[in-house]
Length: 158
DNA sequence: GCCAACGTTGGC
DNA sequence: GCCAACGTTGGC
Image 1 (cartoon, rainbow, N blue to C red):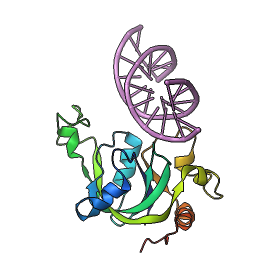
Image 2 (image 1 turned 90 degrees about the horizontal axis):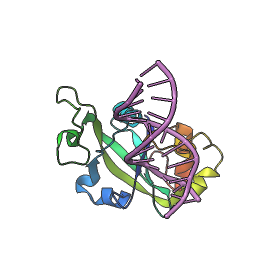
Image 3 (image 1 turned 135 degrees about the vertical axis):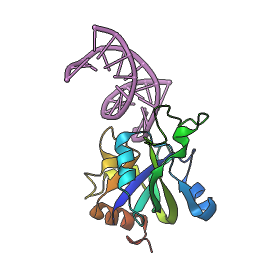
Image 4 (image 1 turned 90 degrees about the vertical axis):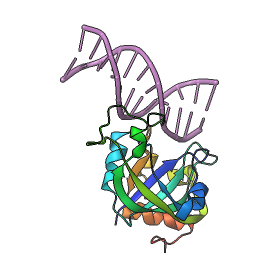
């Protein structure tokens, strides 16, 4: 199983929003960066992802979500009225993908960006790289365990 | 509000 | 193919 991290601005869509969604599930639409898209396409059903609040107070990992549907075409790329519309995208060959994610478990305690930065073993975490802006990033098994411990949840999110 | 880092666009 | 200009992200 692979692990990931998904960024979202809570003022736009928070972990609570995900928990409250029908079946606690949403389509992770709107990714318009090729590197992030490629990570979406690499996700497998059952993979787990940290849910990170960016542009937040505080910035923090706040919970765990599960990939419940693997990559499929992001419908918003074809919707002219959507902010995510992309005229270059063809039905036969969609540029952009989305996955479905379901809220698994909130952290007992949010783990802030400041805390992540000073935690041994997380030095190479993509989220912490200077200037990192990717909204979808992989997380190693070791990083996963460390952050789960800080968050007060079991690493398997059972 | 500022600004560094980054990805994308477009002129050449 | 290069690279300057631009728009966006996101921490501070």
